[in-house]
Image 1 (cartoon, one colour):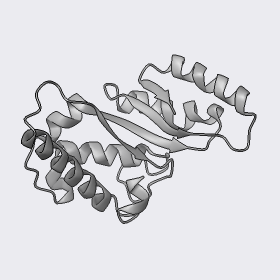
Image 2 (cartoon, helix red, strand yellow; image 1 turned 180 degrees about the vertical axis):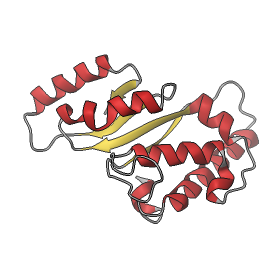
Image 3 (spheres, helix red, strand yellow; image 1 turned 60 degrees about the horizontal axis):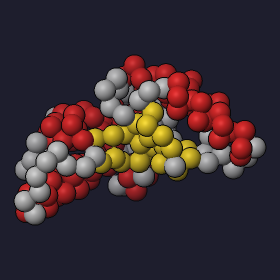
Image 4 (tube, one colour; image 1 turned 90 degrees about the vertical axis):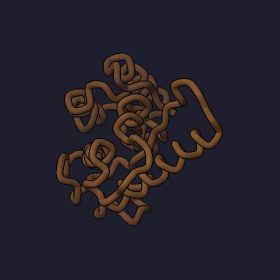
Length: 158
């Protein structure tokens, strides 16, 4: 959850710059190793927190972080980063969004997924740390598996 650690959720340019720097270094390492082919996909798991410092979706969990990161990949100078590699190509061909949540399954369609599918129609998303500590686990998991079926961009959960 880089939005909570680089240096915090209220400094989206800083956490985006850190993510771009890490991806740029990873792309350099792939070149150094002479890797060929399409490359594996990568993700950044954001918290399911609201980013009030983000210019878009400042009242929706995780969406503000994802929107500013997309803007940074498409225009790294926006966050003060000068990449060595093609960040736009990486984002459009290999990047998947993801988030961690402890919310019940029933919250996710309205709080996140409906807007996500409109805003990110070509970028898959997954839930990395899914758990609902306050609900009936089996019932919530069955509901979550149905939600995965209903939202085709949602690749799954762990």
